[in-house]
Length: 318
Image (cartoon, rainbow, N blue to C red; front, top):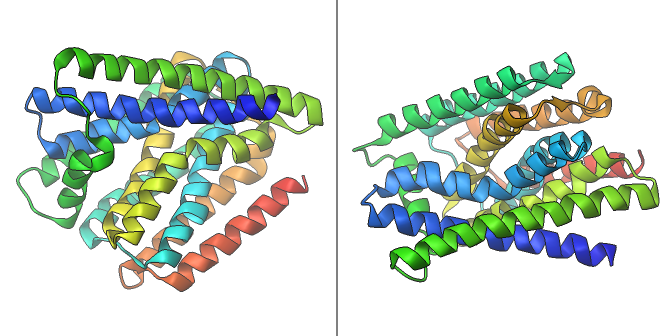
């Protein structure tokens, strides 16, 4: 029963996120919003909704290990596991200009997360600063890419026009219902996932933090996994790479920021001492790989996968 609850929760999160993206994108198109802005803002927020709802509900339910572990674990899994799989399937190209801007913002977000964690509690003021940083990043990105045909701008426009973002109807009532139902499904899925994770931790004596870093983190990152693998198979390497970098920025600045803005989050000592350093190390490793030839090769992808295997092995033995 517990396993079914976890699987159902993850399923509703993925389905709800998909509905929310399709409904929001459809409404934005009816309002003549540009594909670039849709790709930068709506698709980014929509695909991060599962993580946001999960961390928010976990924090409100008094499970900070799941709330913070979801963000930290998702970022580590995005780089070491998802990007590793995608790079093994097809070497990933990184646009130099986008890498300089987005890569530095991703590194800044990781360092900010580390600094805030060492305070012990991420307060509302810190959450507000993270959200404002995300807003500034999105604004700068849009202004820099508006009217250009750079690889980064093409990637964001492609995200806005992607099949996975296409609504099934163009009528306002249907689009509104799709977006609202998507939000409701993600809320229900997050509640089931968090409750099931807490029960699992109690039943088997596993730390909530470890569950947040593994089952919850990987589960809520399923949309990124699907998007990156499909993009890699289609040789759309810039989308696969940009998807992960953008997701990691949203996770810290958006998800952690919005969650802390609503309720302060106590950061578990285990995450401060070990896991957040893994996330920072993975971020630095990815940037180092990407700067060598502006690509992540198959061999480097294999290194990322091996590193994730070692990390999961460490968590399993904790």
